[in-house]
Each structure stands twice: as C-alpha cells, then as structure tokens.
Amino acid sequence: MSASRSDSHAVIYLSHGAGPLPLLGDPAHAEMVRNLNVLAARIPRPSAILVISAHWEETIPTVTVGDRPPLFYDYYGFPPASYAIAYPAPGDQPLSDAVRDILARNGVDCGMESERGFDHGLFVPLKIMYPEADIPCVQLSLVKGLDPTTHLALGEALAGLDRENMLILGSGFSFHNMRAFFTPDTVETAQANEAFQQWLTKTCADPALTIGERRSRLARWETAPRARYCHPREEHLLPLHVCCGAAGRPCDEYFSLTIFGKSATTCLWRPTGNGAK
Image (cartoon, rainbow, N blue to C red; front, top):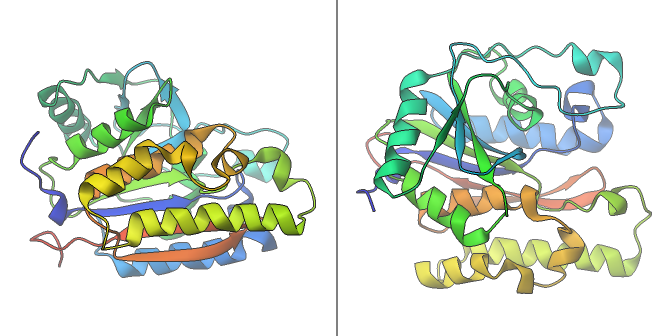
C-alpha cells in the first residue's frame, strides 16, 4: 500500500437526501441543509473535491475526466426547476490522473469517463456547501457487485493521494429503504432505523475499536442490527466504506439528523497534518 497522506485530506460521509429536494426548499431536508453548511465551516476550503457517489456503478472503479463535466439529472418526476439546476464546477485532470495512478499502484485497474456528467450525489450537496462552484471536482464510481471489502480497499488506496487539502466526499444515505420513505413509521420501524444508525456511529466513531475491528465490522455490515431493512441494496452505504478506508481512523465528529422523516448519520474526519490550515 502507498504511504498514507490521509492526514492532509478532509473526509466526509454524508446522507445526501432525496434527489433534488434539498435544493428546492423542502422542509423535510432543512436539517440536512443546515448540517451541510456546518460541515463546510468545519474544514479548510478544499483545493479539490473527490466525490464517491452512490449513484454511479461501473465494472471497475472509474473517474470523470474533462475540463467542465456537464450535470447528469439522474432522477425523474420532480418539478421543472429540478432540471434547470446549474453547478458548473471545473474538472481536475491532474486529480483524475492521480486517482488512476494511485489505484494502479495498489493493483486496481481504473477507467476514465469523459461523457458522463456529475450526478446529483455530487451537485446537490456541493451546491449547498460551496455554491460558487469554483472548486475543481472529480467523481469516482462504485464497483458493480457492491463488495464491501473492495470498497474498503479502494479507500485505503485513495489515502495515498498526493494532493494537499483535498476533500474526499462519500455521498450516500445511511438509511435507504425507498418503500419505507413512503410508508408511515411504526414503533418497530423507527427502532430498526435507529438501531442501525447506532451501529454505524459506534463503528465509525468509537476510539476503542482497532483498525482491524472497524474494518471487520464494515466488511460484515449485513450482520448489523436491522441492516437489510435500512439498506435493501447497499449502494448508499458503500461510500462510507470508501471514506473509512481513506481516513484510517475513527471519525472526529458525527451528526445524527432527521432527513425526509428518517434518522440518518453524517461522519467527518478533519485533516490533521500539513494540509490543515
């Protein structure tokens, strides 16, 4: 594994809400919007942002390339304003190349994508956190099959990226049962939601856990309390695995939120080395 430079990177796993609703003034996302502004104030302004989005899967890890990728409105059935959202953030070819190279040095093939635009896992939270859209962004896909150890290893490789003051952002949702979003809660379902969030925060934040214990818990996440109720499919959880792998330590801070009527969690690892200004 490459020598780690993760102490100069901020790392965030966030729950990005339901499609474009956080940008449309939806009251069920008000707490999330406030939290995103808090997160932006907690870390130095990034030199670049690498986003691992729940909404992109490829056979091998794949990074966006291009000077100014378009937006990919990967949702449907929302008001017309949802399809006029702009976030003209520049790409960052040197960072795209660095991601490909660091993965190659760790024995992982990496694809390059010049056609696909930034999806809402990137532009929704970043339009709130950094509305000027002037920070270079690169998006990295998940890997089809959604193997947890693959995504932990992906994050561990990314820890070696030689880029000062970068933000690695895992954009998912720590609760993602689509049917449950539109079904009234019962005592049992609320308890199930909360039990998994408690498992997640212990896994990510408990300093008593060793690196190996934390890695084992994440690799076996399906054994967590009510795991498959909260994640019938795990694409919205696995950005967390990448973040935990990249950070290599307990998170510095976590936030328990209510988003779209469900308990959700955001985790923050602040930079601690030369990249922390």
